[in-house]
Image 1 (cartoon, rainbow, N blue to C red):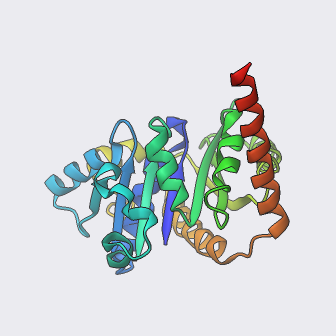
Image 2 (cartoon, rainbow, N blue to C red):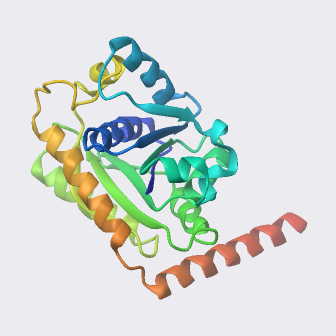
Length: 249
């Protein structure tokens, strides 16, 4: 299975989710490849620190550029050798991000709601919708990233706003798992570790990653509505046609 964690917002803990999901799969004795499609090469640098720390299990991490077109080829070495491929994508390089998402089974979109503001660009829904033109089977799971100090009212508001955003993407699902920001995430990440390698002060952090992984597995098996797929493709074609016409004027 190919899972892409995609967000243009660094505060959405995208890389943190990717490395923890990859570590969880590796600890479950699955062959995992963590592919880095970010401009800052967050996961590649994390892998170097992990090797220095001699943490186990070791993580197979590659720059997505070194994979070439093999992600889209179901018979390629990477697709047949690894049971799980988890991609960390930030959208800075459009080619890298789109190549990853076209090959993806489940697209996980972490969205951060902070001080009444949804940290997701308006173009995000359109970009994801356009991918359905190339990947009709794409499953989309939107994950709420909530500040640790958020009160119950703020949590409920965040959930409602994110559900409203999800409705703009036909067939998108909102995860039941709310991932809390953990103040020790960056410290762990900077050591080349994951929350499964340490004894985190917030025990719920481990459960959240495990629960999210189960939701991703469920999303992969969920049947897509034909109408949702057709709606996305028609919208993408209409928008592309409109933009092309504008460009010729």
